[in-house]
Image (cartoon, rainbow, N blue to C red; front, side):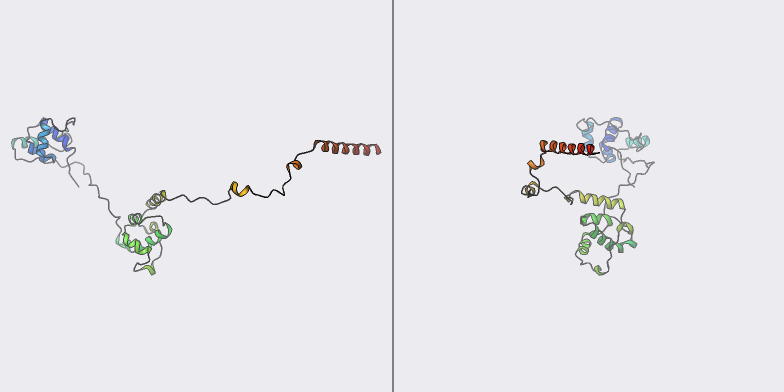
Length: 230
């Protein structure tokens, strides 16, 4: 766990303004160059930076400051923090337990077959393997290719479903969208030369009013004759 000074330059500003410490002592405590501390004292640097009291933040005691003021050779020491902040871990390849490392080739084979859109770097990030191993499995040049069986890395516990879905989504963003297949309208170039011989002409489609009324009249006369005979 790292013990680091909070806001070194702001702390240096406060120490210059409120203590009788030497430039070397302040520079050593704040991890600055003595000339930079001198520039702060001369007003040439850190203009507009508000000083931060290290006593209030619990990083330095007044007794330690008084001791250093009396002894120019004394180096200020940080107080032990009340709360330990863990160091940020550096991102690297995913760690895979020894008991599961033998399953990685099977997981690689599963990813290559079921998600060909994934890049080697994504597969390596998911299950903690090397690009050379992925390439060997793709080319079937792996020493154990004959015995490999595709197995879901999520089921094997090599990665989570969320991580897998995230990588698949990232890989699919740049892929062209495949057009949907199905019945569509024919283009005009394909329909403009269609044969219309079987369709009735426009004259045939229009109704002749005289013929219609004549037919209705004949039907009405036939009906009257039937009524007279009765």
